[in-house]
Amino acid sequence: MNWGVITIFPELLDQALNVGVIGQARARGLWQLELINPRQFTSDVHQSVDDRPFGGGDGMLMLAEPLAQAVEAYGPAHVIHLSPKGQTWTDVRARELATRSRVLLVASRYAGVDQRWIDEYVDEEISLGDFILSGGELAAACVIDSVLRHRPGVLGNEVSAHAESFGGRFNLLEAPQYTRPREWRGQSVPSVLAGGDHAKINDYQFLTSLKITLAMRPDLVRRALQTPGVELVEELRRVEKRRHRDAEFSAWRWSDLHSELAQLLNQN
Image (cartoon, rainbow, N blue to C red; front, top):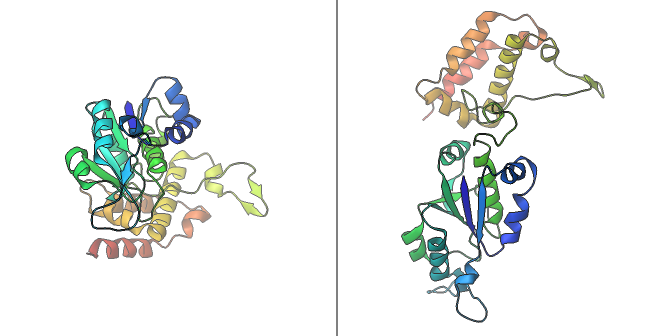
């Protein structure tokens, strides 16, 4: 997969994407990165890429021409401008973007970009959330990292991306995880996880994942309930019918779970 990033701070992206599993995949040639500084497409002695906005206002705007030439220099690609005005980034979008072969991210700075350039060159705008960064470089690194995790060969275990939060059959948050020691400062690992019964472990992780998502991100549960073919309620009933007798299962109030799901499904 080929990535391009237009940025006035190329060294920031190069360092951020050269470590961990993403950096290892880059070293193995599983993806390529081209960093393009729009200053190289300027003609003045100061290599200016910004100017004052018409109509006044705070800050400076990035000029259209250096950005236009930077896009053209990279060649055909899906162009994404990282902007707080964009659509909120999600793992669903990351998986969709992972199917593309060439993507160009534009990490703008200052107070924004000349709208004429956006209208002419940008395919979509993406935001990481309702907050402001000093520039788009960190957002670009997040987008690239989250997409590449869905590319074949990048992760050591191909199942990992599906087992994490927002993955799997229901796109819920990931269940809590534990490692050694089994006893730590008076707290024990749930016995079902150490019992070796993988079917029972799967049921327990499904239930705890559902519980956490209901508490922290009910919108994800509502989406699963409203998505055709996603049998969340049916899976809950299947787990309930298996009637596991472990203490971790007996603590569940099945009627309360079904009631919460029904309320979510009926919400507008």
